[in-house]
Image (tube, rainbow, N blue to C red; front, side, top):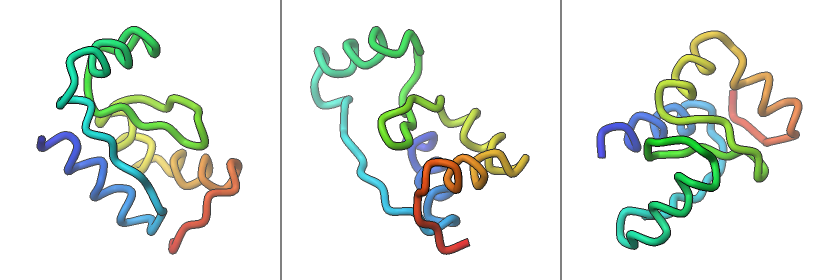
Amino acid sequence: CGFSAAVVQVLSHFGVKFKGVNVLADDNLRNGIKEFTNWPTIPQHYVKGEFIGGCDIVREMAQSGELEQLFKDKQVATAA
């Protein structure tokens, strides 16, 4: 998925370790995660268990500097 690839690109840019989970392989998981967050799209990005948003949110946060600050606040190691 292009949206997932875009999020991977952003995370890779910052050099953070991350884990991808293919929720599209299981309808129950895919629908369950959407209900859990009340967010209609995939991918969904979490930082230390906190839901952040989808692809557009991650890209906007990266451009504004908010994502880097979030990583610092959550003590997520980055290469940036």
